[in-house]
Length: 358
Image (tube, rainbow, N blue to C red):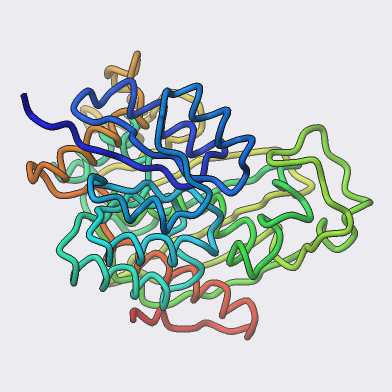
C-alpha cells in the first residue's frame, strides 16, 4: 500500500480550516497528521473536529516531525517568512497563503530557501482555479484577445475593513492595508492571465480615510472582528495606482476596504481583438466583433461543482508527487511583492517609482 502524504497545518483560523476541509474532501492520497495553533482551545476544537492526533502550540516542534511531508502556512502575514523558511530548511514542502510575505526582500528569502532545499513551494492564489479564470487563460493562450494592452482592476468595498485595530490594520503585522490584503488576488490574476511578469513602474496614492478615527467608522459587519478601539490602524483603506507593464501595456488599480461609493468588483482585460470583464458575479462577457459587427458574447462553460480550494489542494499534491509544477510559484510571489512594494513606495514618495525585483 502506498504511503499517504503527511500534512501539517500551522494556523487554524478561517483560512486554515478551509484548507483542512479541502484536503479532506479532495485529496485521498494525503492525510493531516498535525495541527498547530497558539490558541490551545481552538487547537483542541479543530483537532477533535478533523480527527488530528498531532497537536502543537509551537510550529518548530511540529515541523520537526520526521514523517511530515508538507506544511500549510496559514498564519498572519508577518509570520509567513519565519514559518515557511524554517519548514523548508527542515526539509518540508510548503504551501503558503497569500500574501507571500510583508515585502519583496522577505519573499526573496523564502524563494531562495525553497530553491536551496529543493522543495515544492506553492502560493495560495486560489482564484486562478476558478472556472472563469481558467477559461480566460485559455482564451489568452489561444490569442483570442489579440495584443493585450490594458488591464483594469476595480475592487471596492463600501464598508469592509477587517479586524479593525487588530493585526489586519497594523502594518508591522500585515504589511499594509487593502492593497496587500484583497487586491493581491486580483493583481496576481492579472499578471498570470497576461503573462506580464515584469512590471516596470508604479504610480500610486494611498489613503487612510476611515481608519483615522476608528470609533467613528460605521459598518454593518466586520470580518475578523469585533473592532479593538485600543488597537492600531496605520495602513491604507483606499489606493489608486497606475502600473506600467512590459512594452506599452498598462494596468490601473482602484481598491478600497471602505469608500463612499457602491461596492464593486471586476477585472477588465482590453485587447486589440477582444476584451473581457469578469469576477463581478455576473456572466463572463466577451466584448468583440462577430460577423463584422460589434458584439457581446456570453460563453457557456461548466461552473457547477467547481471548487477552487479543492482543485488547488489536488494540484499541490500533484506537485509533491512530481507530476506537475505548482500552479502559483515562489518566483511569481517575489514579483507580486515587488509590485506591492512599489505601489506603497510611490504613495509615500508621491512619484512614479520603478518596480525593483530582488
